[in-house]
Length: 260
Image 1 (tube, rainbow, N blue to C red):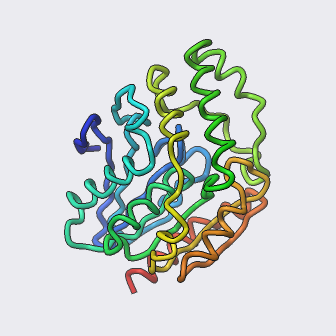
Image 2 (image 1 turned 90 degrees about the vertical axis):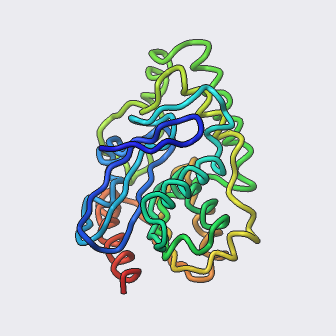
């Protein structure tokens, strides 16, 4: 494992070099490289013949962070990603993959630097635009709860949270964010939204969108709207864990096309 310094944080990274197409893999809110593997969202585990870069976002997993909500907004996370790619793959277009917050980070980065990505695999895109307001309010409530009652009561209250059908049977896991940082991480998410539809429509690279059903935090409506906007996109929707188990093969096919 190695690290990469960004303003206000040290990002923990890992790299598997099999001398192929460059790929960067991100994770979701309050998750990490390790946790995504436990909940079947580490699609890179099936890749071979690539140069695969994985990292924990600031404040998550083994990366450091500050108690500054603005540090965890999606545009700031996109700045971290672009800086990391400039360091590790300075002259190459990279395939990007990631769920939820990772997808949002990739979209912001692709809007900011269109030539940086050869293609994208976006998993379970989160609430956006019209559905974002209620989710932002929920994140603010979670931040307040952690501050007022602590992590132990937060975890106890989280045990009965609804799981989408495609996640039933995955292990129970803990947030991969330290207690003192968690309120700031949630408030950063509350301050965030996807780029404008007009900006997203200008991302003219192949994009695969992978969604699942019955998850208010990752509604199919966002995936469908992205599919409408992105000029070179395809959409797959899973409703079972078995269907999600096929997603690593989708990523492998996406990377193979990018390597073309």
